[in-house]
Image (cartoon, rainbow, N blue to C red; front, side):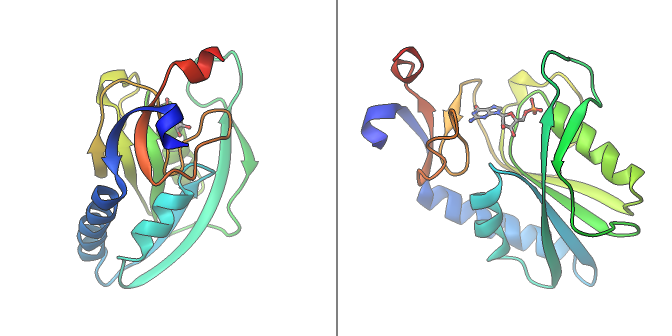
Length: 179
Ligand code: 5GP
């Protein structure tokens, strides 16, 4: 399947595994002696969350949220919560887990929401970052890979809900859009 839809492989599974191990070590050190709730944003963060937590030591818990932006709006803060967290986050250290940061709108909004819900601290880990596309200023504390401004799929990232299962990150062939 990869041969038909991927124009260029940007990151291999081997690279993803190595980087998750490195990030896991960094995050474990940063949270040594503290508890942290990892909050994954559905659905794209699922493979990354699974790979990353293999390398986290210490007191960690995981939860997931599903948010979407209201169509046709450009303003920050207009997100719809399709699935909220299962627990109160008052006083907790939160690490938001995202597949990719593009304009930055989603994470900026969710980060603000976490503080509004009483989180003590909110940090961000993302597998991919497209810095050229940033519109809203958001600090990513841990970034797996910076990538160019191209539409990518694989390892959680979809096109019309497909290709999330690919064991790589690659640029989608334009022929897929025009079929
Ligand atoms: P932001 O709010 O930062 O603009 O958007 C982040 C979301 O946009 C990601 O969670 C992802 O769902 C989507 N997104 C941004 N760039 C890409 C991309 O290159 N490929 C895919 N599949 N989704 C993307």
